[in-house]
Amino acid sequence: MGTRMALVGVVSALFAAMLAYKLLHAGGLEQTALFYVGVPAIIAITVVLVAKPRSALGLVMAVITVGLALSGPLLGEGIVCLVFAAPLFYLVGAIFGAFTDYLRAEGPKGPQMLAAPLLLLAVIEGSGEVTSLPREEVVSASAAATGDVAAALAAPPRFAPYASTLLRLGFPRPLSASGTGLAVGATREIVFTPRRSLGIGARPEPRSMTLRVKESGHGRVVFEVVRDTTLARWLDLREAAFTWTGGRLTVALGYRRTFDPSWYFGPIQRYAATEAAGYLAATFAGAR
Image (cartoon, rainbow, N blue to C red; front, side, top):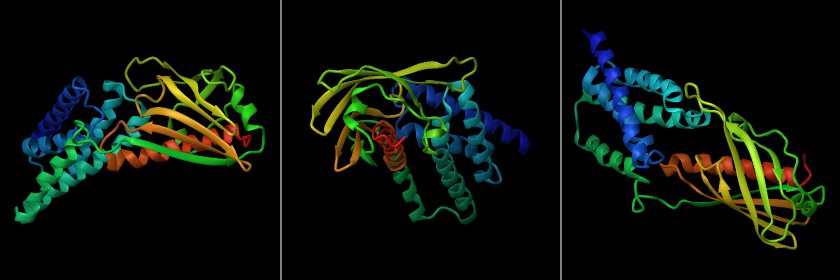
């Protein structure tokens, strides 16, 4: 009976998670904490209520693992999304599972009941403007300028493979660029590696980005993003500013964080964007 109920609990939890995903996706909330905190919470609650396992923590972790394994083929998610979502799913599931096991052993107590409102605050972040924390971010990185930076920026660049371990996990890499000049209004069309999702029968999707020179002066050029099919699923890149003086090139990337919760995705996106700025600085400073 226990094994049968555990199986029912697993199936029920996965069905509930799939339904939640469909509803949140339809409402444009699949990048909010309602998804990244709410879905693993739904899995944990469903498992506990339906299966009533001897160890809630163990079964919740197992169901989340199965759910993550199926999300690629069934939902068409890419490897990068799964790599970054998995720790958060496991964290939320572990908190619920361990908390349930603790309550069973010790019984409910007043202070422990504070977990409910705290969970509510964690889940609703990003679901609306009122519940959203500041999203605008600017990161920068520098490299020693060993060549003519202005000439390098004015010509189509030659992109090298990523040196960053994080970016090599599956982030899109620039392959080629067209367009020249640094006059205001000059454009660049950059082609990136195609997106390859884990969906069954999914075909590679082409990705590119169009930039336009927004500001140009002595020792400084700013490109604004006018079209992006490359990073739009990950963050909203707004502009890239190149400033060179004293033998160093500094690249500053301005973007808008699009994922919640901010305490989790904020540092990840900040670090990834900083690594990307370092890659661009090394590329145009002649360090590659």
